Length: 269
Image (cartoon, rainbow, N blue to C red; front, side, top):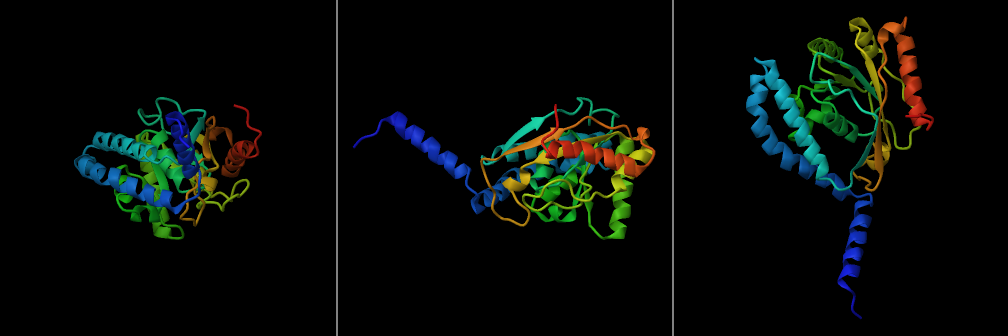
């Protein structure tokens, strides 16, 4: 029995789609490979700009944009990843003295990767263990992301200092106030730290809520398998003016309420 060429092509496409949509440890190792393929040459090329940035800050901005493109390319090389964005950031964010505090829920490691590609010159407060991933840690250092060691008082003080400096420079800063990724299929929000909200109120910096959906389904906490075929949705909500809230707790409550509308499927864009 013979098959037409067009049928074989359709069959091959179907098989490729099935493979992309299967949870597999292969996708995890492929992600690591793309980090090395993009990260190694990227680190070498960006090193002069990174070093110059300690003396001339515009070089840091240039290097950060370069790193952002490198991570975007890295994600594009992973066929299992599907992303849809609802809403958008203002064009001036990350390019002028127009800082914002981005507050996001945390469902998966890939939240960090996607956030970097979305906001120019963003500074992310992320767990210190990410800096241990080969080449990714170097890229995050060059982009001046801020490592945080949970439970370490000295680390908290250093984070606070770097956070305030970044916001005063006009850089957008992204924080995951839940402090850790949720378990797979977790509904709602975990308890949020007041730390970032207090800094935003003290400096009168707008807060912009951001919500990740389905990323825990794609790459669950504690798993080395990545599930393909799932659309990861990112919601960028309207910003909140902290001056309108009398206390930090009120600001936190309003931020959570807006994020829960998305998680409960009640948000209307």
